Amino acid sequence: MTSAGRPGRDPATDAHDPDANGFEDILFGEGVVEDDACDGRVPEGRALGEEGLREGRSGVGIDDGPGGANVVVRGLRACSGAVAVGVVVLALVVVVTAVLGARRHFPGPGAESLTVHVLAAVAVLVAQHYADRRRGLLAVAAALVVPVIAGAVLWTQWWT
Image 1 (tube, rainbow, N blue to C red):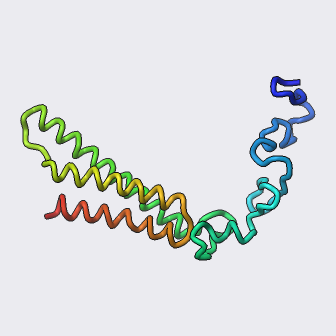
Image 2 (spheres, helix red, strand yellow; image 1 turned 60 degrees about the horizontal axis):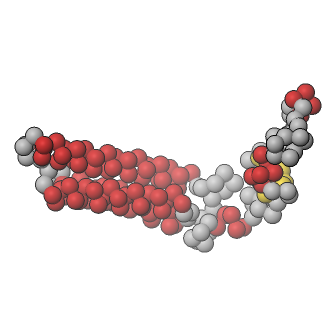
Image 3 (cartoon, rainbow, N blue to C red; image 1 turned 90 degrees about the horizontal axis):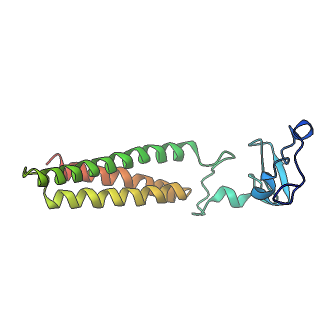
């Protein structure tokens, strides 16, 4: 017996047994079914082909397919994530520039620019988090908000 109260593992006989380490019991509970679409195990009653998993939280009915989100939606999320990282890095650069400018008595970005960059960074992080946690049209809408905010910051703070 192990410290968890399970029988000890024999490496010679249990080497290819997926339940030998007990992780499947913890992750999926007692009843599990095999699923050929992902070559993995999913909880009983929650097969990937069921309607509840395909609709997502929005209920719009965009087919996510057996592998998760639609390829286009996943690509849009990835691009908006990269833009979100860029906005956050840009905000950090503006904050560091403002701090260094104040310490060295050198004019840096003003309070308005600092505020806009920090608020934009927070907004894109919230929008990206929402896009990553939703499916369907809600994910697409949230992912499209990120480049709109980034474009607004670049247009108002850098190009005018």
